[in-house]
Image 1 (cartoon, helix red, strand yellow):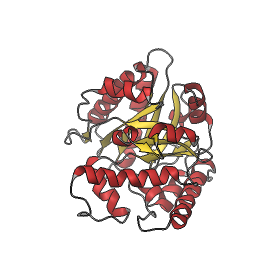
Image 2 (cartoon, one colour):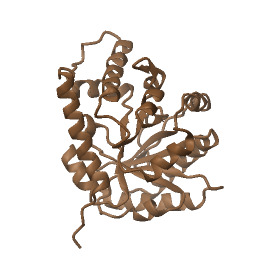
Image 3 (cartoon, helix red, strand yellow):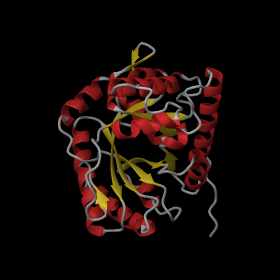
Length: 301
């Protein structure tokens, strides 16, 4: 797929985006969920080798194809690694899956109810390397814990500033200001975030498009204006800690939003499974998430 073909697939395809981008701090938790306990590795290199093997197993599975998986978000080390003897982005492209890369370096401490992104030294070099490997887009995450207007405005401003850098490098950014679904002010935070993003979209120069990765809103349909905005290529949803059945049920209430799940995609996969068991479990998860992304449930008035 060339860039235009990837863009068309992401914009209009039926399916969802797999999030395979757990990084440093979250890797031990991801490995534990996969059935590999802490202590099974003696160094960070061994730990990252184990998580890469898990991701390679997913990408190589016959269940993981572009028929239902539109794209996949990679950790930097995964992008730089190989799957089946090919660079990981090429292995994805060969399966009809559009590659993205996580670019943020983690979160700052909370201030004004939000956690902004840490500085990203060397971002331009990373973007150039990613584009050279055939990567289509990026993803950057910050977190909103409270309905603090000043904090949410700062998070959105930072996200869009980084997005401009990504666009200038010829890639498509996924902007991810995650609202904590356990927040006591979740619904108010959702509404403040929507309005702040709409202002930022309207102020974008040129005609470039961005993507949005958002927590499923407490009020179904709250993000309809974002889905319909001409500067938004696609709105995807994170699972945010929901187990897959609940995440899918909530997602299905929101027309135009598709999944970009991590834990909810991987929760039934185990290192000890045979290949047949692994492929069956992954296939069942893909089918369930695909259905919630494509077949929307009517919401009672």
